[in-house]
Length: 77
Image 1 (cartoon, one colour):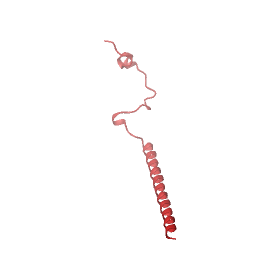
Image 2 (cartoon, helix red, strand yellow):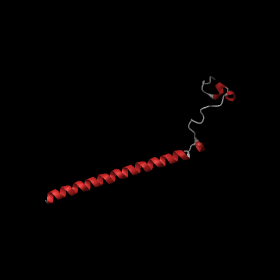
Image 3 (cartoon, rainbow, N blue to C red):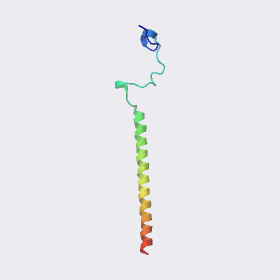
Image 4 (cartoon, rainbow, N blue to C red):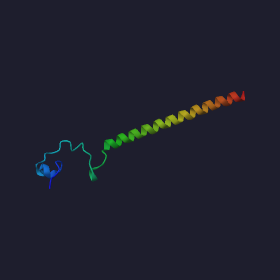
């Protein structure tokens, strides 16, 4: 039986060194969760996007009402 070089038994499972990048690797299972500052940043970004879209909608409705008023004024007179 030939083991692949990436299998833990082939490298000597007990002799492996500590992984220096273990904090950057994705977690699975119960450890897979977002940190509080990531949630805070996502909430702030969501509020910013909602506010920008609301302002854009209000401005477009205002421009439409203004131009409709000008058009109605020109039709009446």
